[in-house]
Amino acid sequence: MRFDLTDKEWAVLEPLLPPVRQGGARRDDRQVLNGIFYVLRTGVPWDDLPARYGPPGTVYNRFNRWAQQGIWRRMYEALEAALPQSVEMIDSTSIKAHRAAAGAEKGG
Image 1 (cartoon, rainbow, N blue to C red):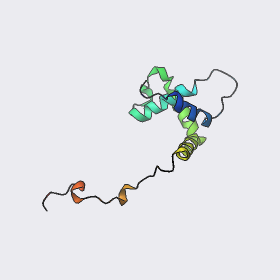
Image 2: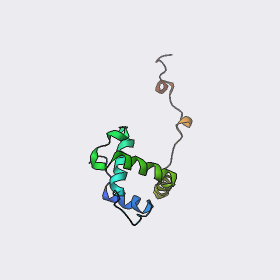
Image 3: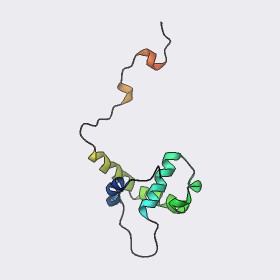
Image 4: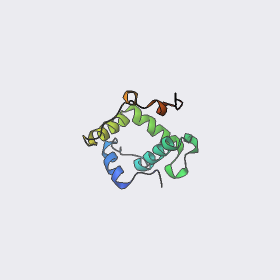
């Protein structure tokens, strides 16, 4: 689907997730991660998550558990480190723009 991870994206993120514990049945991490990204990208409430991503409670709980375990921070740092050195962030508060770009009236 449109919001699902590609195989290449999954290959980068999968090693950053906690290992799967032995035991009972567990919802697939890729399916859950796709569901989390679906909610974050569309803004749909957790309870309205399409069924193909799994039970909304499972997806929501995994999102929170990963937050508490620092998984999201780990993903961010790994992806940031993988960026080419030529990629720079620009603080928009320091960019000078013509006054018309800020909505000023013309000819004034």
